[in-house]
Length: 160
Image 1 (cartoon, rainbow, N blue to C red):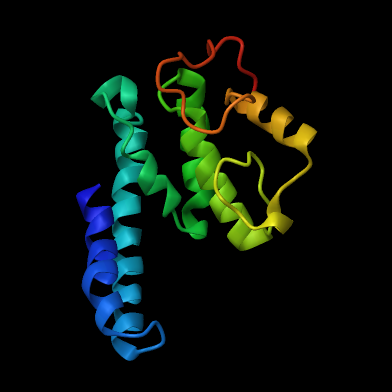
Image 2 (cartoon, rainbow, N blue to C red):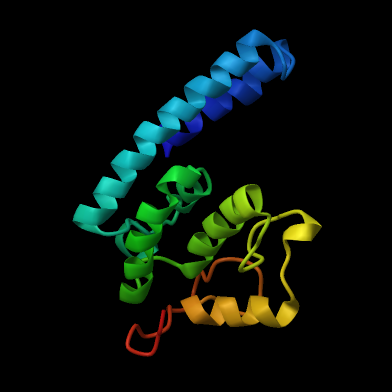
């Protein structure tokens, strides 16, 4: 998480204050952040493949869900395969998966699937479809946010 947030903090707290978004310095720092993100995300993906998702049940926090928001669309398919398995095992709260998919879906395809991330109005699907999509992955259809104190559905009942 520290690696993920390091460049973002510098961009927000210093580069963003000193330079405009179209300046060479700002653009260079954004490019550096994207390169570091790629390395961090590949390391995170490899960790999940080997050791499982380090979510709330393993580490007592799900701060790693923030990293999923920054997943590059070229790594989406690899993360998608791994995370769906982790959802079935009950190792990841579906909310974090939904946020990742909504953010990337809205950016790349102009589509949202779970309405779990603030997206443009034109990305939001019909209400019934949102509920169906949420239930399909074990996300609560009733409230907006992660399940802090509720167990994820039994993986035997979850059909992805």
